[in-house]
Structure formats: C-alpha cells, structure tokens
Length: 239
Image (cartoon, rainbow, N blue to C red; front, top):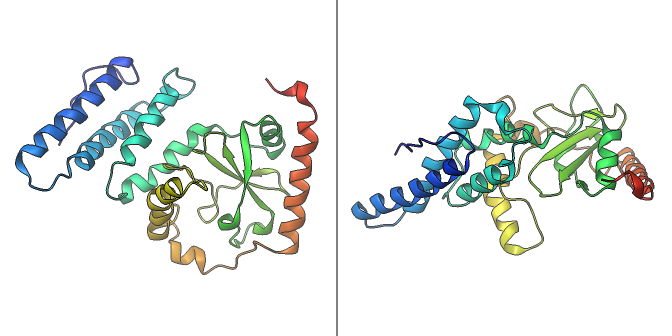
C-alpha cells in the first residue's frame, strides 16, 4: 500500500503524516482480514517511503535537527515487522554511512575516550582476507548502539571489505534478554541469510579462517584498550 506524504522530507509535518498514514493503513487492513498483520504491513509501507525519500535526498540528513527522529522512527517501524527483507537488510549499509565515523583510528580513539563511541568485540569481523591480517581488526559502536565501524590497528584505517565491514544495527545488542532477542531477530538472523553485501555470502564468510583469539589479536586489542585509557586521562579534550 503506497504512502502519500505531502510534507517536505524531515519536517515535523513529514513525521506527523507518517504517523497518520501508519494508523490509516492499519485501520484499512483490519477491515478485510481475519488475522491482524496490520502493524507489519503499515510499518513496511512507512519504511518503503522513508527509504525512497532518503535515497532521493541523501545529503540532507547530515547534521539535520531531525537526525535522531529519523532513525528513531525508522528503527521503531523495523521492529514491527515479522521479518527483515533482503532489501531492508542491505539498506543497513546506507544507514551506517550516517554514523560519520572518522577514517583514522587515532581520531576514533579520541572519540572513544570521550564516550562518544565504545570499543566492542570484533569476533565476527576477524575472518581472514587476502589484503590484511584480520587479527588486527577492532570494532567500535556508537554511543546509541546503532552505528558500527571496524579498523585495522596496523594501518590505522577503516576496514570496508564485505567480509569484515561494520554494519548498522536496527536493534542494538544488549544483555537485556528482550533487546538481545530483537538484535538476534533483526540484525543477526538476516546476516546469516545474506551476509553483509551481495558480494559475499554468509557461508563464504564463515568458511574463512577466523583470526579471533590469536596471539596477534589479543596483543593488539590490549594495546588499543590501553591507548583509549591513556586518552581518557586527558579529560580537557572532551567537549
């Protein structure tokens, strides 16, 4: 069911119309079907419209005052779906670009020391590739848990290969059982179906040697943690 929005993208009226359209679609669907899947159908329609609008005007979201509202609205609708489609799964790569992670690891260390990003387990981002030793891959997640970025500690640069790249989280992971379940359903399960991109399948990824747990990995991770701790002592640098 198409979503008709007259307001300009990202205005307050735009989000109000999205909400109204969601309610209308649910109401229309409930009239004709015995089983109520109206919430998922409405959410899919809203997401389709939001994806189209962002792809039509990708630059406007950078630094926009409604930046957080866009992602809050998008993720909330994702969680109303019964399952993730392939299109929606790969759209995570579009969304992850808006995390605006720095290209260089030394700049990320400063952000992590200020609590804007967090060093996280890179266990599933250490599959061997030809170009670089994956033992030296490390991952950071933004403070809100949405955006991810992987770096190679020897080059100090972002890792973008489709085997080990960082991806957007529709439902950030957590030790909370419900949040853990949502992360599994909306982020991890689709990855096991389609990998990170259509270039390399999940099966092809997991057939590669994993460098997690190697001596090189443990040493480089420990050195990075120490570097972040050292930066944390420079409290005056945080804004």
